[in-house]
Length: 149
Image: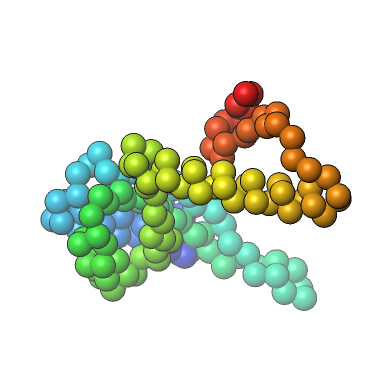
């Protein structure tokens, strides 16, 4: 994300636009496909300082963000170094996601089910009960849908 604090909204947006363009040129130079990047937002708002005499305008802050998706690790370090040093951008991330098609998702689901059963057994033992048959299962990220056996 790049941001700028200037006296006027136009000046702040102009600064942010120039630095955002520099980031786009870096991504082009690194060969990051346009389909692997997106603007995450652009905003401009007045910023204030609160004093004993009331609030005082500090100017207008503009900000813009870009999200980039990588399938390999080799470009992450160089990109972070360049945008933070050359463009004074701030970085939020990286965040890691595993493709839903990756077989590890099934391994994780199986481990999560084992963990859930162990917790259920512990809860049941804590109230001097025992587990019965499964009534429903709400897998994470299932958009609220339950699986009924």
